[in-house]
Image 1: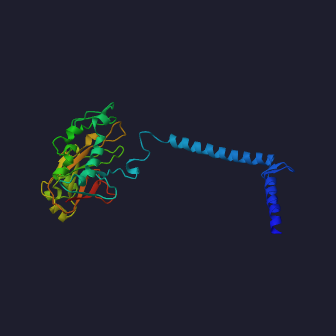
Image 2: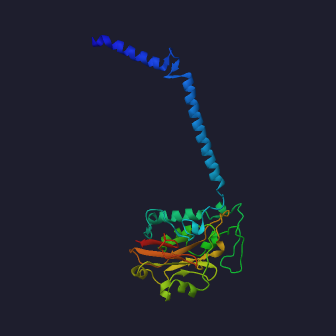
Image 3: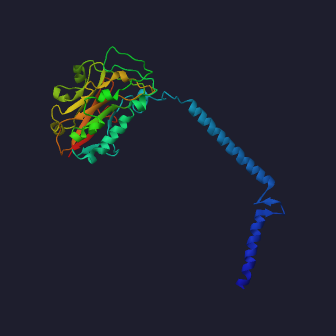
Length: 313
């Protein structure tokens, strides 16, 4: 009996589906008449047309309020509060600030030298300078002035000459004297206010003796000072006197500021060469920026300060 009813059941299902697709009695397709389909298609056409027009209007308003050269929020109204950070290269790993290598073992320091070389490539003449309207700046000169609309040309060969911090000697790693690069992060329209004297800097920072500032790159009135030191007493003991060199020794030139999104602008930097420090000991290093309008206390998002670890096996 069930076998006899099976074809009949299949026939009924097919007939019901066929009637749903096209019902000749009321001239409907998929349960709707032609007029009903016209209404619903018209409704969705108007709905999506309105949404599309609304989206286009939002984009027009958004782009009309954007400036190709000037950010809407900068200075104290931005998230950085107008206080620049201190950047470090090399840092091939974003999850670690430890720089660890073994003297005489190129594979241990290749990631660091590769990262430095890749970063400095953007300063090379053939990559950056060709066709760019740059100014030949006289750095660390009180009398030199330049237009804020043009960026200073940074002669990489001149900056690194005689420093022992070039790719030809693996940036000092092969000699056990690694070079690190420190730069001020770009803050739009920020102009550092340099200290007029070293004593003024020390007084402002609450420093009482020369031991408080053993390693410093600074030139009064024309530069942002840069210092590096062991973070704790034990770290300072593991850094010998004269164990750190800065290139250039004057610090970061203020003539390079402000950054106004000029064509070809590159941040000025200081090469820090660690010449003499203890082996097989993790040394915590703290580097700071010094200017009247730079907060390097480290209390607010580490602005003006950089901390990392150095280990030579």
